Image 1 (cartoon, rainbow, N blue to C red):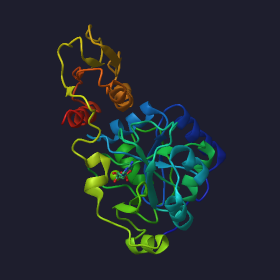
Image 2: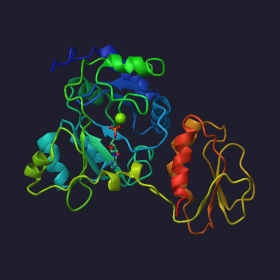
Image 3: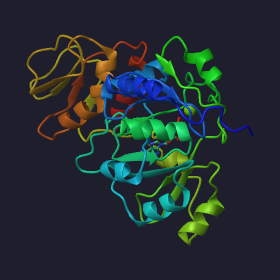
Image 4: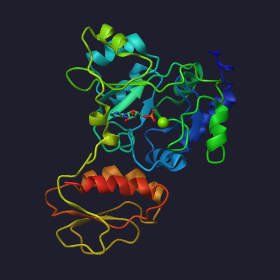
Length: 315
Ligand code: AMP
Ligand code: MG
């Protein structure tokens, strides 16, 4: 495989990427696995715009990319298995799933409303340079439209997303070209959620036991039918609200609810997506009979919002 053409970015380009991330923009970046569509993981609206640009119809949890273990430890509850695997395979194509820290500033959208975060340190020198300069976590799924194959050159990204993102950083062809291995280390024993170039045998050897595998369907939150269903009923497409209900509003709210949170008073779907999980959680309170949700337009990122609301209403 050819080595990356460019191994170091000049300072102006790094500054450009960092200021785009700091102002909620998206930057496509090379990693050793595939090109990623990166946003500041702490900025809910920026993360929501990833879904919009990819036309992804569902909120699947995203991988957070960081420069070093110290940064990872700010976001996830570190443990011995994580330390062992990180020492053996980071930087590299291994993603660790761990519980969020108590004060974790990462957007709930990155976790798709769950309690865990998938995190890794990429091995590509340019990705590292960018993560170091940015300082925080970058949420980055593959930089392709939903349903298309993952891009392994900057040209693939330009062809598919060139019109919708302000900056694509060319780091040459990806050397691995396959998505990272995802390992859940949040439980007693580690489990492979997605196979990749770091294999079952490599992981088992380092951990000193046979790691479980093939659990993706069950454990990956994006694929669970009723992932994050609130404990009280969720009533979709409400046309009025009862006094004992909580209202999850969109646009001008109905009056008379026991409590109201507004996904987006100005009917902005990106803002609504950014608020969705945190607001659902905040209204999930047994004081209320149910959560009435006002209709959300089923277009653009609204499709992903409605998909997730439909799952939340399954009891
Ligand atoms: P992609 O970013 O498109 O390569 O996909 C990310 C992969 O990581 C998907 O298979 C997700 O289901 C998985 N993933 C991301 N976050 C989590 C998480 N918190 N828990 C379990 N799996 C995750
Ligand atoms: Mg992908």
